[in-house]
Image (tube, rainbow, N blue to C red; front, side):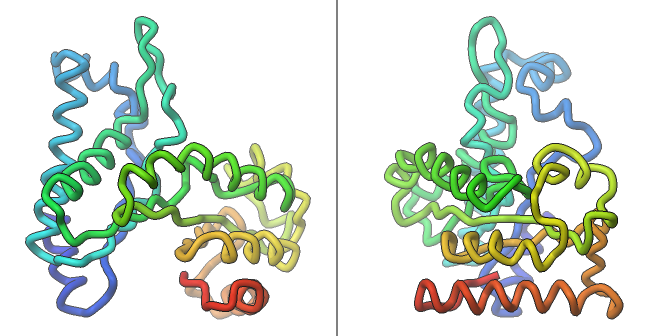
Length: 246
């Protein structure tokens, strides 16, 4: 019902569609097909079918409530084919089978719906350098090439990134992995990263996390980030000859 209501509101207000986040924030074990099989007492193949059926129902509802809508799924997980290995058999994230169910149902029924794969898993929020981001984009494109061909006219890749004001403002997960290792010390240093992202993908999301000191609704924080984003968009606009969309 949440899905149905969101689509109905999107249609009535004239926005392009809805955003869907398949991340199981409070129980990451739910990403594991083996764990889902255990808690439901279902064979793993039946779990996969059930997840695909959830996706198919989502596509059916979207087609009913908002024909022509864009469904922005923040990650589809197609770049993680071996997220879990069970008895020698690789499995995707559970959410990937839901996304696949959405895509297959759209294709099967010729629905007028468009799906964006947001890149939270395949691209990530941070990169150690602009060159690392470029390589990640190329690697992701190679994985998605057969999927884009299979779901031609339905599936499109979108980008994502998080920002921080200063290195000293980083907390928690933004201090770890590629976020912690990034050569960009300030949001101004992240402009070339955003420029590359905007030139690559037509749709992009910026994760405004307080763990990077980005408080998007506070007048003491937002203007600096707004200026950096605007600068990156202006530079990307000149590079591609068209306005990137956020």
